[in-house]
Amino acid sequence: MNSTPSTSSPSTSWSGQPDILIVGAGMAGLTLAAALAEQPVSVQIIDPQLPDGPERWPNSFDPRVSALTQASENMLRRLGAWPAMAAQRVAPFAHMDVWDGDGTGNIQFHAAEAGATHLGHIVENRVTTHALYERVLAASNVEVIATGLDKILENEQGGWRILLSDGRALEPTLLIGADGARSRVRDQLGFRCRTWSYGQSAIVTTVQTAQPHGDTARQVFLESGPLAFLPLREQSTSRGSCLSSIVWTLDDDQLEPVMALSEAEFCARLGQAFEQRLGPVLNTDRRFAFPLLQNHAVDYIQPGVALLGDAAHTIHPLAGQGINLGLLDAAVLAEEIQRALQYELPLDDFSILRRYQRRRKPHNLLLMSTMEGFKRLFGVDVPPLRVVRNLGMSFCNRHSLIKGQIMARAMGMEGDLPALAQPGLVADF
Ligand SMILES: Cc1cc2nc3c(=O)[nH]c(=O)nc-3n(C[C@H](O)[C@H](O)[C@H](O)COP(=O)(O)OP(=O)(O)OC[C@H]3O[C@@H](n4cnc5c(N)ncnc54)[C@H](O)[C@@H]3O)c2cc1C
Image (cartoon, protein in one colour):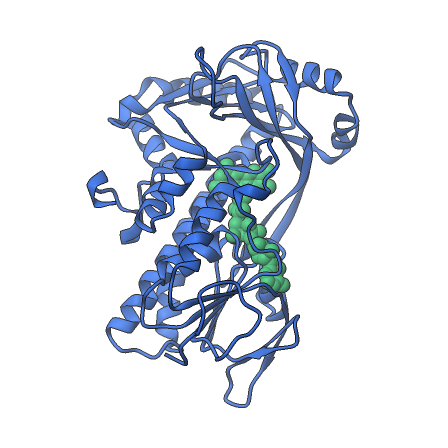
């Protein structure tokens, strides 16, 4: 270890240089820190906006939720974060219903068909972040610092000298950019990216519908893009929860008029777009809009640096896969670091990062291009294509083998899974 951290709580007085510096305490950065807990390396994680605890959360639901796959649940269980999340609020869903708003195509998935109790969970981002943060604070080799990255310079040994916003300088052996879609680490170090804007934004908010959602995640493909109703758990209800988190993709020129609607008009417009599948939309919470872009770093690594999560790849939310990929990145990188420690390789050995990139990039690329294909297929209103996609959906719906493969992918249970994500007996967790 470069040095021994003296404290395991957010601190402003750092005593030494870390082996690993993680920039960004979002879900991806915290997962990496939690996966490295109690390993023989010193880790610092910095973020100017550290997660708030439940005592500071407003009474409403976090407008930002994620559909977490079975693989993500496995990781969060093994990292010890899941019990705190479950004690807060997680909403399992057992069914998915996807249809083409412009045609007759329809496909449904049921957990029972995969021999599972649920297909995934809808979880507020703040619930996941806070539970991971608590695990990280408990780790004796990890220090959390409430500050931001300011500048990255090269030091005399050819390594990195990191200047923090509070004036300190750090020289870690490994620098990790987990600082989200607008990553400063990525941009300052000149990582090349393939980026395009969709000219679209997503409106997210919590809505109440007349009918309960029946633990079903629903998504309709409209010409402008997908509209998802993701089931949320209501505490006291005997007939089933009627609360959903929505993600409504709109072209940028449609955004302002929809954001400006009164609540009654917004509910009516939303209910219409959703074909009143859950009856009228009765009320909504405050609306937030997120611009959508796709971004993929050509390389995730440079000597002594790795990107993970949204810093490496930002994906359209239609697949509900962004953070699921980010958690897998973190678990694989932690696995490669642990492997290097086991074989007594120095942390700046580039083969560690090369293995990380080799395991993660093709998987992320495949998922991103599949989602892009979906986005384009449903974004066109050319009659032959509409027929093909309707037939395709209905065909898949009738064929259990194909459906099984789609479900395995949606549950994150395929590909080169790190040990943290692999299935196992619940007793293992
Ligand atoms: C509308 C919408 C719906 C979505 N739905 C889903 C879904 O259902 N399922 C799913 O898997 N994904 C979903 N996603 C994607 C998911 O939200 C992101 O993939 C995820 O939040 C990325 O996590 P991250 O930790 O990589 O980055 P972030 O969450 O962006 O965290 C980055 C952290 O870095 C910190 N930071 C930034 N700059 C600095 C700096 N200079 N110094 C120090 N720290 C810094 C920030 O404060 C932040 O805490 C959705 C996204 C959107 C927009």
